[in-house]
Length: 189
Image (tube, rainbow, N blue to C red; front, side, top):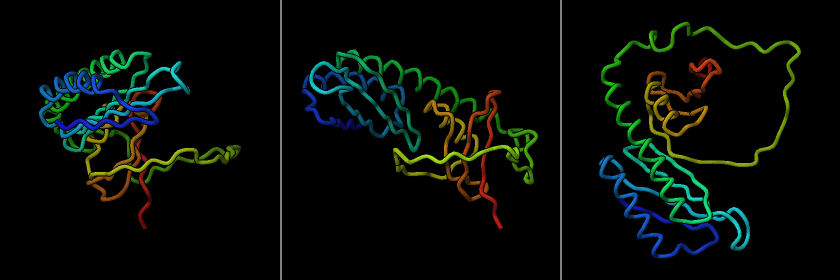
C-alpha cells in the first residue's frame, strides 16, 4: 500500500512518516485490497500551541475508509487514527461477507417506496438562502443502493451522493431520523 503524506503549512518530520508507515502497514495486512492511503497533517491554530489534526483516507477498490483525530502529539494522533481504521476495516469486511447472504429484491430493501411518491412542502414552509462556504470534488463510480449504504456507513456520513447503476442517474441517499434510509432521485421526463 502506498502512503502519501501531505502537510498543510507545515513540514512533516521523517520519524513521524516512519512511525505512520509502520502503523498503517498493519491495516494493509487486514485489508489487502487497499491501494493507497493519504495522510493529511495540519495544525488547528497558528504557531506551535495548536493541536495537530491528522486525517487518514484509505482507498480500497473504490471504497474509502477515513479517520480524523486531533492531538498535541503526532504519534498519538496517528495511533488513534489507526485504531479507528482498524474498526472500520473489521466492519467493512463483515459487511462484505453479509452482502453475499442478503441478496434481496429492491422492493424488500426499500419497503413502502414507490415511483410516484414525492415529498410535499407544507404551505407555511420558507426557503432560506445561504452561501456556499466549501466545494468538494470527488470521483464517482457507479454503484447499487446497497453499496452506497455501505459506503455511507463506512464514512460515517448522514448522506451520500452516488451514481445509481439501476436507474443510470445520480441519487442522493440519506439517513432518516428513524434509522432507515431515504433516497432522492431526479425526475426523468
